[in-house]
Length: 335
Image (cartoon, rainbow, N blue to C red; front, side, top):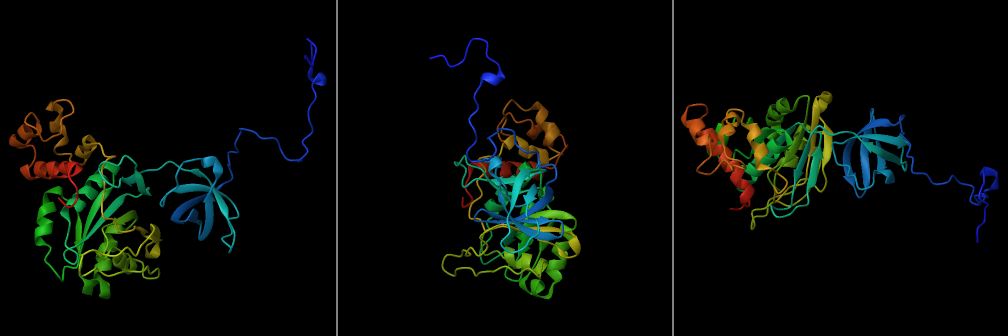
């Protein structure tokens, strides 16, 4: 049955009253132009600790963000109660554009990317020279992830009192990766922390390494007023126990940078990495790829890099290092 005539106007249309007295739903979202700027320090069971100016607040992700994830290191826009008082809660309504994203997958066959941290500019790869034994393949994978994300790598070798660092340093010499060698005694008296801290000045550095290498112990030495729990290496398996369960951004003394401690990893999948991007970290080799065939893996008979090196444009050790790193994409860390 036709309710209105052929020539109806606004006065003829009946509007049902809103019995609840609330506003009608709308798809127009607020712009939150007055939102405060924040820096995500850590995440625990859906609650995020955010630094806003000189205080920390607790916040949750607003529904309007949908499936968009928020990770440690993100710069965000926050509204709501920003006092930081106990039992108060703010809302993260916007995630600002990221300058870098460090990702990993569970293994090379897993297509699901896990974002480790955002907006870092340096990746400190921490490995022990003994107890537990070093795993060069894991180091290689972390280097590939750093180069892919545009982060500058820093190699931190711990426990030099148990084994010499010469062989490990020789392996990565051709890559030109900066390094710091530390011992347990040096960590105790502060000398090692001072040397590492010099490399972190005015930077956001994320620390990555497998369990038991002394990563959290090092971070505790760098930021002595914020101690995190540490564990021991299992004498039977040679593996460390996970004591750090969530990533945490800590300000270095005198506001000279940030150190982001992360849980220990036992694998670092590279399913998300395009091998073609790794060559960008080798400026002496990259021009030589112009003569490579399409989709060249840079480790095949027709690769132009062999002739590029033979003509003296780059050192053979550099090409060997590149191919070793690219090969980690096809191998597991324990191989």
